[in-house]
Structure formats: C-alpha cells, structure tokens
Image 1 (tube, rainbow, N blue to C red):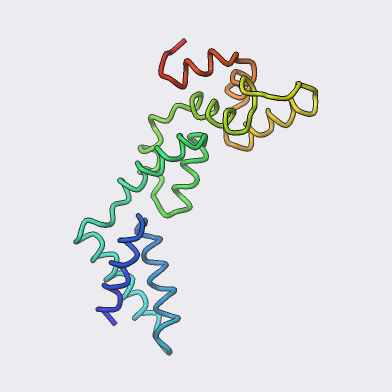
Image 2 (cartoon, rainbow, N blue to C red):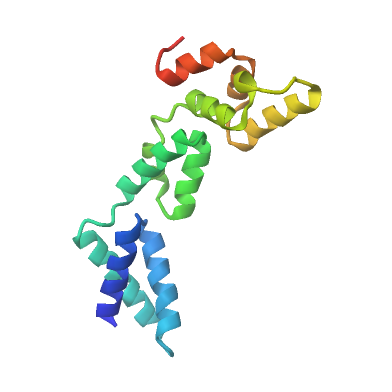
Length: 169
C-alpha cells in the first residue's frame, strides 16, 4: 500500500501543483476506491505518507503554490479578496494566503477583468442603465470594492492601457 501511495503521489505531483490538503484528499479518496475494507487509520496513514513523500522530494510547497496561484489570479482579473478565498478553499492556511496576496494590485486586476469582459474603457456597445448595472455588478461579484469598480468604469482607454503597461498615472 505504501508503494502505491508513493507512486500515486509522484504521478499527481508530476502532472500539476497540489496543496497539502489537495494531495491528502486525493490519496484518501483513491485509497478508499482501490483497497476494499481499508480502515480510516490506514487511509490517514497513506495520506500522511504521500504528503511526506511530496515534501521530501520538494514537489509539495504550499507557499510556492500560493505565489503561483496569486500571480495567475491577478493576471486573470481576480481581486485580492477572491484570490485569498480561493487559496483558503484549496487548503492554504490564512496567514500564507494573506502573505501571498499582499502585493496584488486590485486596480490592475479590475482593469484586466474589464478588458476580458469588454467593460468600462474597453466597452464596445453603447452605454445604457442596464449595461451600467451589469458592469458595476460584475466588479462587485469579482470581489472588487465599489470605488475600484467605479474608477475603472469611468476610466478612458488610454488611462487603462497606461496602468496595464506599468505607467502609473
């Protein structure tokens, strides 16, 4: 069983990054499927062994996972709040998640969201009340505060492009 747990952990960690919680949960789920009549203690032992294997081989690192997920989240137009919540759901502790999202620029992320959704300065359609509410609601659902949503909403395309390119206004 231990060799199966090691091989399974190596396979999973070789395919993509995992948090400690994700790896432990996946090994536990698969162990219950693979081994009939396995006890909860055995499942916990296999999960712990797989996690230890991941750390021993430096393939499991929650801090690195949080950093990569934070960069990806900001580049996808996610707010600091949304990224942090997502990290916690993935099994990253709150302190690590808070440290990882400390440098996230919510304004830049909101502009990226606006560009992806053709909102605010990237709008292609004429503005009416329904469209205005749709845009401001999308910012709120994305975890952005009203001030940031309003600021992006009122921005010109040149201002938005300048912020995205790194030229501060």
